[in-house]
Amino acid sequence: MLKCPKDLVQQVGNVLFSLFLLVLMLDPGNAILHLKDKFFILFLGYNLLFLKPDLRFLLPIFTVFALLFFGFIMGNVQGNPIDLTYMSGVFKGVSPLVLLLWVKHYDVLKLARIPALITCVVILILYGFIVSSDAIQYAVFLYSKQHNEMVMITTRNLLGIKFFGMYYRSIVSIIPILFCVLFTAFSPSHKRKRHFFFAIILTATFFISGTRAMMLTPLFVIGILLFNKFSQYPKGKYLLYPLLISGVFAFLLLIFLLATQEGDASNTVKYGHLASYARLFNEHPQYLLWGQGTGSTFYSEGFNAVTAETEWIYLELLRNFGVLSLFILGVYFFPLYIFFRHRQDKFTAGFGLCYFGFLLIAGTNPFLLNSQGMTVLWMVYSHAYHVSKASESCQMLK
Image (cartoon, rainbow, N blue to C red; front, side, top):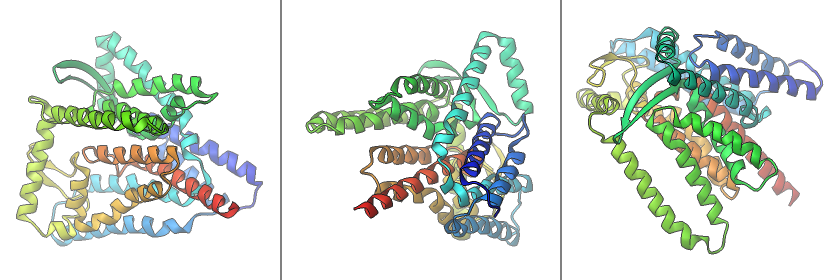
């Protein structure tokens, strides 16, 4: 580890991390800029040279990669077909996990705000061009098809309302930033007006996505913030709890109606996957113990084809690794324990609920084991470290 002025090392590291986050958000499929791998190697090398790693993360990082290798071996031992392209994509997707060794040195939530704003502005501008011209829409559709489907354009019927949506693959990684910006916009602060404008841009980006999960996310976050707001007042509970119960009931009813909407192609595909999982585990119960193998394939009624991946990520982990998948999930769920311990802090409590919402969304979307999931994980562990450190400092002062 080289010796340099500490402030200079930190500033350069912050700039590199911000640029890396911008690349990940603008080009999640690495099919346009082709800079994701280059920035990852550059940023990893910089941290290796100048910053001290937090060796406590070695065990969870090693465990994840060991399970991936174990799954590959078990798949071959059992003679199951392996999609090598998909498997290599999984290994590549989780490789940024090693950056957790240095995440304590960075305020990732702060560093990600400008990249998130730039990405949302680009998405909104692109959406404006698409809805203004059928020719542009078709051109973007073809370009996206040729570039790893970075943008998915769709016209959907949501509860009888026809909606034109444009889903940008990296938007899920902006969920923690959405909470941070809305939290500041709801707080009495001199930065409130600026963040209110910022919040409008981010919220609009989620609403135009055309996917149920992303469109409901701002409503979920605003619900969390309203709960925090009313709970501060002594008599707020008399109004808060009836509203909370009504709001939760309405939110769950909306989710149920969307999930059971007849004629929705997405629902048909997802329920077809579930039937195929049930049949697979019924015919091969041993997969529940040690899995079918990393990158293994199976026939799914949802796609009406053999596939290595579906949207049901938690069932997918169970299919690949069996009960050992709990060790991988532990890496994602452990920060919730930290946030629960520091729930007295309003921001941390709300942020923890927002992250829990992200994990629920991840249950029906395959973005845990890729750069989007890794980006959220950096933000979450960064805040978990800093809130724990702040708590320790307060205890020492006492």
